[in-house]
Image 1 (tube, rainbow, N blue to C red):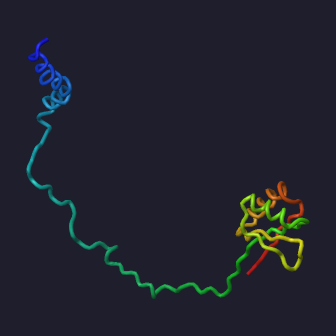
Image 2 (image 1 turned 120 degrees about the vertical axis):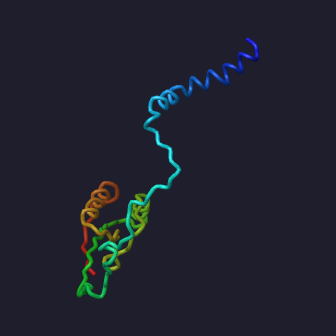
Image 3 (image 1 turned 135 degrees about the vertical axis):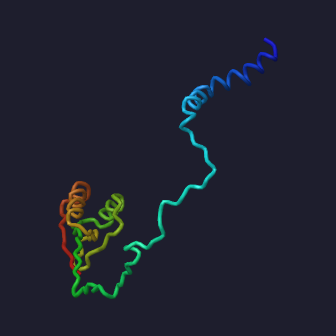
Length: 141
């Protein structure tokens, strides 16, 4: 094949093959196609709605007065025999907030937990790996 046939194939037959579907659709739907150069009209009016007229007056509403607040948290008491081993085991489990109970020298406190269910879940988890002597303590502020 010569160069002339390649040009004919590349510049005429391939584009006709690629765009033939859209060209045929254009010919069939020629009456439905509207091309205008006019700007579309606005479909809204500039009147102020009722929601824009409403102004919120915060002073009209009473603010709630908190007379007494009470927060409840839960701690885990862990009784231990070897402090360094127990503390190392707790750090290995990912617990970083570990406190010593100064009233009872053989107790560690872990927490605080905001929910009792979370404290019970951690208690079960710690009983399997660290110690069997774990209790839950309720702390109110």
